[in-house]
Length: 250
Image 1 (cartoon, helix red, strand yellow):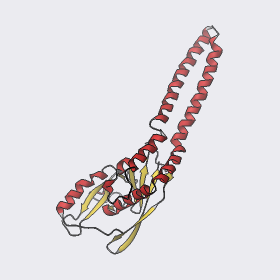
Image 2 (image 1 turned 180 degrees about the horizontal axis):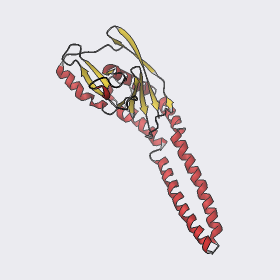
Image 3 (image 1 turned 90 degrees about the horizontal axis):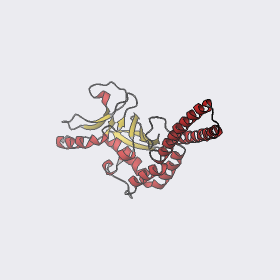
Image 4 (image 1 turned 60 degrees about the vertical axis):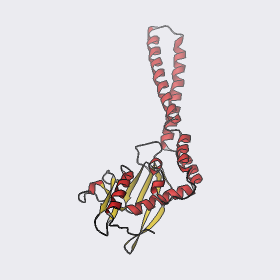
């Protein structure tokens, strides 16, 4: 269980502040749309604390979202990462199923099928007109050939997308390779390439943290799948709190 942490070692705080740049551009506030940044409150006091704060609140309270204790945030990330490490094969199998039925993949396959059908119809019309020699038929034939070329280009682009940016096998391989070196739980967040694994972390509020997988880099914020939630207890002085974190796929 985490406890409220403080230190008055200024050099140590400066060292930590430099290392916390790993969070830059990674933690998002969904309320105002800005990112969180690292800050030390009461730097020269014995109760100095490391926090993550919405950038809108650097000078004064503008955004209503909560600040987070760095130690608690790290523990949430570590708990989620260790859960994945412990259950890596189940995680990868589940992710494979999720991506196979992902709206992006469904939309691509639907578009490919539609273009395939359209191309088949164009070929039929071209064959029917090919034997005719009238001026009107020639104009129609030229138009059909232009449509054929355009449709083939779109079809190739969509098929290439399934082979590159939306290749499920390569996405699973990416996560598998990131997890491969880890046979045992991590103790420090810096041990794990979390920025390569997660696209971002969304702080819905202090007690609701969302770690986002976004393999296809979609701009849609709709959650496709949520992995099991983890509850992390922590104390502020003598008061016990609980915060819930989860991994989501978008």
